[in-house]
Length: 142
Image 1 (cartoon, one colour):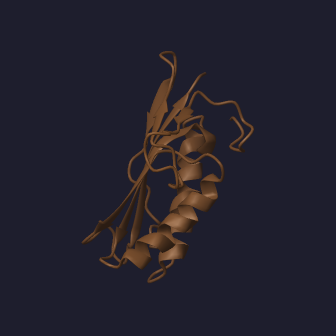
Image 2 (cartoon, one colour):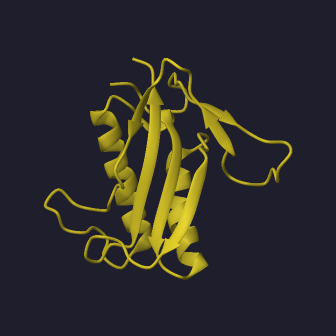
């Protein structure tokens, strides 16, 4: 398995735009070379190994569990967070502050690897008590 730290080699190139608002905490685009293998992940849920929902009622705890589960799924596919090329963070809430709580946890986990990301408030997610889900695509060179 490859390391997931910010100094790990990666096939992903983040593209920052000087033509758009530069104060966003993510790149506007990302590329991968033609010889990269893409890893498409299902929506990562805040589920414990026994199938129960982690952090019931706690958006930050659920976001952290999603990141933990994302790291595991990526590792199983031979990748790490540094290989992620885009994310989508879904939060079951109509309160923008709740979305910000989830975003901070996910953004902090990625550190300087600020991939293109979308943050969405949704009405409901699939598992009982689920408030957060994290989607990702990665690109790796074998």
